[in-house]
Amino acid sequence: MRILLVASAYNSLAQRCHTELLDRGHEVSVELALTPQTLVEAAWLFRPDLVVAPMLTAAIPQALWSRVPCLIVHPGPKGDRGPSSLDWAITTGARRWGVTVLQANEVFDAGDIWAWAPFVVAEYDKSSLYRHEVTEAAVEALLLAVARMASGHLTPEPLDYDRHDVIGEPRPALRQPDRRIDWAHEPTEDVLRKLRAATSQPGVLDTIDGEEFFLYGGIAEDTLRGPAGSLLAMRDTAVCRATADGAVWITHVKPRTRPDDSRPFKVPATVGLALHLSGVPQVAAPQGLPDPRRTYREIHYWEHHQVGYLEFDFPNGAMSTRQCRRLLAAYRYALSRHTRVIVLGGRRDFFANGIHLHVIEDAPDAQAESWENINAMNDLVAAILTTTSHLVISAVQGNAAAGGLMLALAADEVWCRSGAVLNPHYRLMGLSGSEYWTYTLPRRVGEHTAEALTSRCLPVNARQAHALGLADQVVPGDPATFRTHVTALAEQLAHSADLPGRLEDKTRRHRGQSLERTLERHRARELDQMREDFASATYQDRRSRFVRRIRPETTPAHLALHRT
Image (cartoon, rainbow, N blue to C red; front, top):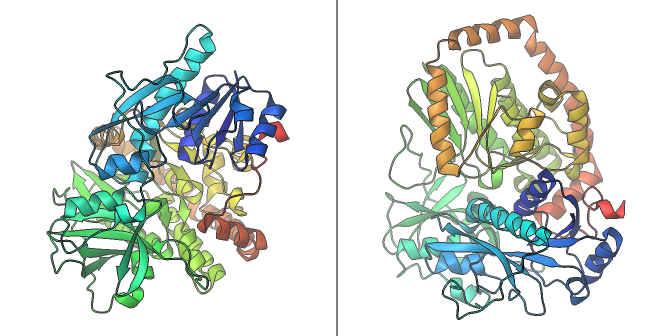
């Protein structure tokens, strides 16, 4: 079928749906839902058989849905209606939820139902839930709906609230008064639900020492305690705040926007609250085997059966200069241990997305901070590329992009979860890229494919990544299942009879190739161009628009095939 994919933003769900539809032989073009007029114009240009909308914040115009069937992916069970579906699910403590694919009509979210898929509401924030449980259910339901529509002989189910399986209901938008936290009286679990339901948008509006901030995060702390509402501790870039019966970690804040505000975007909590942290102690994260106590950890190292697991969970996958340096120190520690295999990866969300654009945008000298950040990333990647004492595995459990994906490709093997989406390019940010991509990417996929991947700027799913050579294995299942599979595979590898030979071959190959000199040449060439990129108006403008969430004026040409 000819399918026009429309979305308010080309986010992770839109990217996954795009790649899955292409996998099944459909011809797909993308149009961002910027105005009703541009959507109608896109349909006139592309002449689609079907419009699919995996992520919309506004209604499809009648001039479109009355002429072309339009399938809307709604993150709620049958009958659920309204713009805050997931927010309500988390806030009310729902245990089961779903994704419904319905046909657009004159009533928002009330069209005939083509398919739906249930999921269990895991105890994570809205963004994490959206990237995993919602995305998997959405892909399942959308592909089923498209297949049913393509068959030509099936009809949708009208929305009928008298049916026993229609468990949703119309709900209003969740407003800030509904999200307000009463730190003196609300227990930790209630506070967690409110924080988790507001990540990544809109945050929970709160007051700290008379100054208003939007708070983001919501990670439980089982040990630290103090007067309700007080700031108890800092760890890395997060801040711990006491509740009525416990404490929670806040990872990011955003000052409430004012006309003279120079920081109308999210920053790490320790940065945004710097003026309010006098006397607040910095506390170290517990290390060793996984601890049942809940707390905040950006980096966690543990060992089991000759495998060292270096886990890193950087919010949104962004890695600042300091985070890169902390991870490099942890990696060097892992190399010093008497293990055979090192597994790199996170517990659930992003693998990595490269340099931290928010921290860079907030820096006094953004160009200088960009330079420091990219060199810190390069130092980390170089350490992995030159490792000969261990076999290194990148366990890509979540999405990865740009320098974060090149970090994964530095390992000896890349194991990718089936639901991950990879973006092997930099150019949309006005950057040519570094992290030794000119060495690692062609080595895996060939020069021609490397050029295509970095210039076309399109996402690839896990199956496509494996076919291209970006991934060595695709491991099915949700993040927890992936983690179990990775542990079993890594420990089997650590005790395999051929591992010593593989390590010897690795050492011999590195010595024969004079790898360090080769890497130095690639790094120098990449950084020569990046120095120019960081000074360019293009990078400065695109970085600022990205950080401030400024919508594009038109759909990027590489997505809108109908406009080329």
